[in-house]
Amino acid sequence: MTLSKKKAREIFGFTFDEQGDNTENWFNRACSFNEAAILLKGSSESSPSIAYYYNAGLSIELLLKAIILAKSKSFGTNHNLIQLSKNSGVSLTKDQECTLELLSEIIIWSGRYPIPKKEGQWNNYHDVIFEKHIIRERDGNTFRTLANRGRFPSIENYKKIWDICEIEYKKSA
Image 1: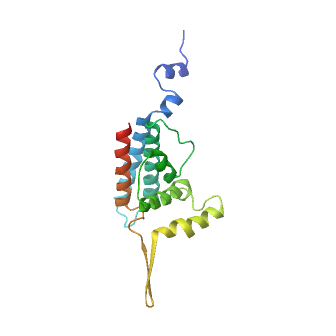
Image 2: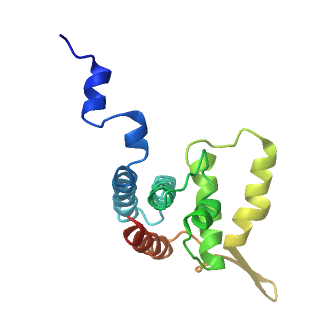
Image 3: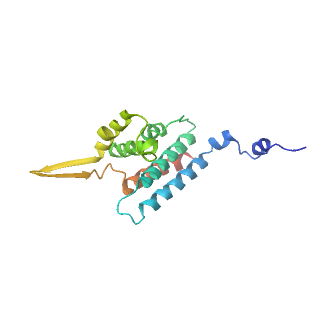
């Protein structure tokens, strides 16, 4: 008698459902993207690349989903990091939520494509979301535009959010 490949996977617990519900799988994948983000940020470039932001956002998404699964909840098809953090029970500051909002846009489209599928997403990104991360100052005829250090997804802000989520995962798993 020959075992089918599917039956063999079932015997070893390597099924679609079992692997999808395995919080350790989600956590390990999150850790891989976390390591990639840190490596990319540490590269010789003076400013971080979109690849850093994409990996940072994806690592947080996977970690939040691991927490949600560990709490026996479901997340559906969702890349909105603020919604995922609320569903996971992770408490973040308003500045950290702004960071997640920007990272959500990056993992949804900006990290992969030069423009989103719809112009409205483009306008919202630049007029609302990205603008929250910019500080504009004027001193007489001199204007300065700076990144809001508390909200921009710098490596420091990213690591703080990662650490908060990782602690919550370890409590829940």
